[in-house]
Amino acid sequence: MRIVALSSSRGTTFQAILDARARGEIRSEIIGLVTDRADRGCIEKAKTAGIPVTIVAFDRNETREAFALRVEEAVRTLAGETTDDVVLAAVGWMWIFPPDFTSRWKVINVHPALLPKHGGPGMYGHHVHDAVLAAHEKKSGVTIHLMDGGVDSGKILLQKTCSVQPYDTAATLQAKVQELEKEWYPKVLSMIESGSLKI
Image (cartoon, rainbow, N blue to C red; front, side):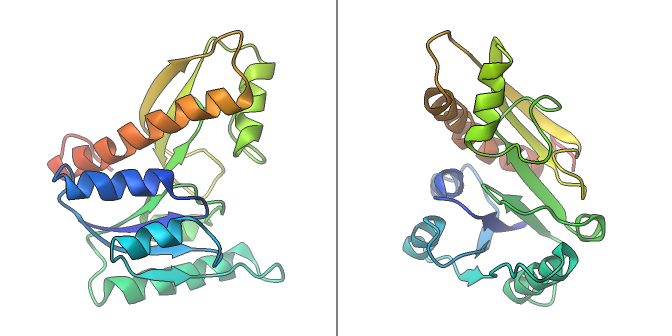
């Protein structure tokens, strides 16, 4: 398959995918990065790796359907004539796609908690970890799932856990979860390649 990464962040998990590809753990070609702002940290990581970057800035006056169509246009430009083998890797992507978009594309997202807990509208970044701590959870972790047009509601592909200690803060918990993201997102892509995980 060919991978287009979608990122609105510093790109730590995106870098983990690039590193896994360089080590031969992922065979798929990473054909591009789509991001939403010119100041995102993921851009420099893509440029260093020689990955084409497309910026699709969100216009507050447009619908999410219109934004999704512009993202789709960017993906099709990166992919060329054939898109059947393209998978979108959402790594720190902050936007929700409408159902018609996710019916046309396989979009693999990573969420920094154990869904269905601590997901849904407003559950991103430190808000997720604040909610985990407020609920006095003993475990948190990472959920890698397909996007389906809802908010954190798609088919779960894999979950991995970490312990939540009494001394944890949102920052320390986030660091633990990010380590899981960097380890397991590339492994999920490898599992899809091998056919041991179906999407």
